Image (cartoon, rainbow, N blue to C red):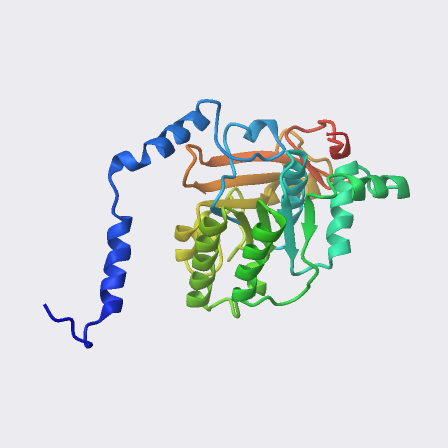
Length: 302
């Protein structure tokens, strides 16, 4: 048969690509075995620095997590503590703190790492030397175009071997709170680049409204389009116990049987657990603890 010049070869090329992606179920046997082998020893993924979350929450490769909370909820502090915990697990972590200068981000982490409100010069030097080849920051404050954020992910994974990348926050990457299509496209692009690079991307976002009374924030309270929580793998909410704070103002003494902060795991696509856990906040160190009066972790000794 004669092959004419008016054939759409691109159409056949795409068909060939699709055909190559249709595979027998037996092609995935090794991956299935690995999937269950990792779960035989507990939940898969890297962990938060808390005993109570150890077998509940995991941060797996090629995933995107949203961390949401209202202003002042402590979500950035929680992520700073998470970063310290990941570094203690010998993971490589990069933070793009687009709302705060790098030295301020590091100053808060130094406070958390040492457990004291004003670390000494020797403690700061020890903090700077601790896991020096594993903790990175992107030195930029202000807007980051979505394509630049995706490029940062690729560069970090390829050139630095980064395993976890924190973007704080989405509002610095998408113009306008009502740009739902922009939010969807950005989060979709992050999900794609996470799979491409095997990064775990942590994206900070804000809540549409705060909880009132006994109400704790829910997934539907996250600002913007609900599609973004459908796209990502995990959704975490950090919420202050406003009811306890109001009661403390009236009674003067806090009821420390109740937590100061709630961590809500509202979605965990590749994990079996979703729920709410309470934490107590230590103002001196800016660390969250699992129980009231619990000792502070010195990360530099880990």
